[in-house]
Length: 234
Image (cartoon, rainbow, N blue to C red):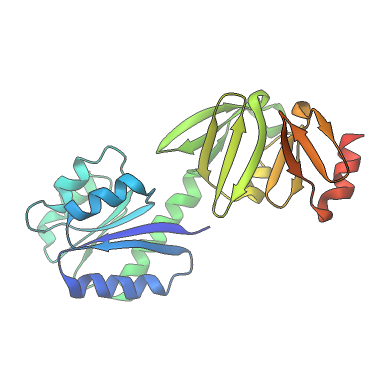
């Protein structure tokens, strides 16, 4: 899984330095590097950003003011040449506050704080109920909200790169998560039938040795999963 990152800084050299730091981190993808908050606004409307690296002191609109006005707030690391903004930065629940010039050692420390937050709060999927066996629903993170999805309503789950699509009877939910780790959150009615698909056994309307049909959607059976499917369906 890669975290999508957006840099906002009016100083070209500062942006280049942070870009170089990010290039050394395999689990981060730089979506864009912008010279102003105004330019970044459009990107935030079109992309789901996991981490903002945001300069505070910028012309026209300060980084802190820009962040306050965001409806959907990503995690943020504030950067600045001034110590005076530290309190304001942490009041905005910043992951970190880094003074310029930014060394890789100091930058990496902030990145580790972000990674630990992601690991600790399990931001994309929260299993409710006392145990997985007794769970009747799950919460998934969709557009910065935790959305309740009832297992009974799930038809199948589809993997698309770093994301999964949860197809239910009424809606489709897209959340950032690997299909393998999501599979572990599900109960015994669900089965992996392909590297990119998990199905709900209760929703199957027909099947052959090559595919499974759910509400007229044909889902392929992968060669490596064929034997497990045979045991699962009998």
